Length: 335
Image (cartoon, rainbow, N blue to C red; front, side, top):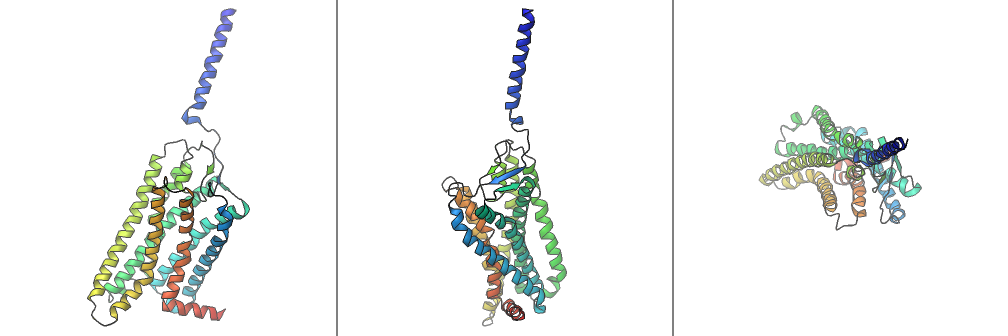
C-alpha cells in the first residue's frame, strides 16, 4: 500500500511538472485568440490628444472637401476630360481612401475614447495603408511619365497618352501594389499574439502590431522592408529619370519663354512629389532614430503623412493649373 501511494504521488508530481512546462513553453503562451486590439495614441503624452483633435479635424475636412471638389470639377467640366486629369482623379481617389481609413478612427479615439478595433478591421487598415501609399507613389511615377512624353515627345503625346493608357496604368497601379502588399497583413494575422492586445500607436502599423506576437517576426519585417523599398525606390528612380530627361529637353529649347512654359506644366506635379517624398523620408529617419526621439513623434508624423498630402494635392493643382481653376469657378457658379 505504501508503495502504491509513493508511485501515485510521484506520477501526479511528474504530470503537474509536465503541464507547467508545457504551458510555459513559447508555443503555448496564448490559447485564446485575440479578438480585438486597443489603440493607445501617444502613450507618453496622452494630453496631446485634446489639442491635436481640432487641427486634425480641420485638415481632414479640408482634405475631403478639396478632393471631392476636384473630382466633381473634372467630372463635370468637359475640357478636363483628358488623360492628365484622369490621373489626377486617381490620385484624389487614393487620397480620399487613405484619409477615411486612418483619420476617422484617430478622431474617434481623441473625442470618444473608442480605442478598440476588431482583429479583422486592424489588418484591413494595415493593408489599405501600405497598399494605397504605394499606389500613390506609383501614380506619381505614371504622372511623371505623362509629363515626360508631353515635353520630350509632344508630337507623339496624343497617340501614347490615351484613355486606354490611363485604364492600363490604373490596372497596373492597383494590381502591382495589391499583390505585393497583400502578404503583409496576411503574415501578421497568422502570428500568435501572446503579449497582450494593446498597440502603442494610433493606427495598425505592421511593426506596432507584430511586436505583440510571441512568434519570430523576422520574415514579416524583412518582407515589408524589401517590398516597400523595392516599389517606392523603383518609383522614385523612374521619377528622377523622367525629370532628368525633361530638364535636358527644356534646356535645349531656345525660343523665348518656351522653357518657362514647359517647366510650369510640371511645376505642380514636381511640388507634390517633393512634398510626398520629404514627409516619407522624415518619417523613415525618425523611425530609424527612435531611440533618440520620443516614440510619440513618429506616431504623429505617421498621422500627418496620411493627412497633409491629401489636403495639399488638390489645392496645389487648383491654384497652379489654369484649367482646373476655371473649372472650379464654373462649379461654384452652378451651386
